[in-house]
Image (cartoon, rainbow, N blue to C red; front, side):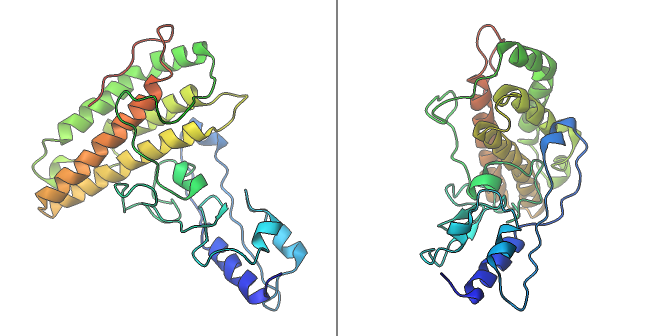
Length: 266
C-alpha cells in the first residue's frame, strides 16, 4: 500500500483536472457529459470507500494504490491515470501550446488529448497508414452527412486559404467566427466516424483533436500577426494546414464511390 499523503497528492492532481465547462449549443454535443469530481478528504486520509466514490473514468483502485507509479505520472483531462507526463504537446511538438491543460479552451472537450493526455500525430495527405483501421459506419449515414455538410467543409477550406494571405491580425477573424465552419467539420466527423452501435470512437476523438488544433492555430496565427512576428505567423499557419489536411485525410478514408467525392487538400 501507500501512505495517505501520497493518495492525497494524487487526489489533488486528479481534482485539478476537472473544471466547469460552459454548455455548447450544437446537437452533436448532446453525447458529451460534463462531470465534475470533487474529492473530500477526511482528516487528510482516504479510505477504500472514498477512493471508489470518485468514479474516475478509466482509473481502477488497484492503479491508484500502486506504489510503482513513476514520479511524473499524471492524469489525462478525462481522468485516465497514465504512467508518464501529460501535457498538450506530448507526442507532437508541433501541437498548439495554447491549449489549456484541462482542455477547457477548445471546441470539442472530448478529443484525443482528453482521453490519452497527448497530442496526435499529423496524417500525411492521402495516407492510410494512420490510424490502422476505421470504424464501421453505414454508407447511407455517411452519404447523407456528406450531402448535408460538404459545402460547409469547402467553405471552411476557402476561409483558411483566404486568411493565409492576411497582412495583419485585423484581417483574420477570431477562431470562433462561423465563417470557418469548424462546428460543421465536427458534425461531419460525428456521422463518419461513429454510429449508434459504436458510440464515440477513438477515430472520432482524433478528428476532433485536429479540428481543435485548427481552432487554436487560427488564434495563434492571428496573435503572431498582431505582434508583427511574420516568421511565427508563417509557422502557425503551416501547422494549421497540417491540421486541416490531417482531418480531411481521415474523412476521405470513409468516402467511397458509393458515398461521394473525396475532398481535395490544401
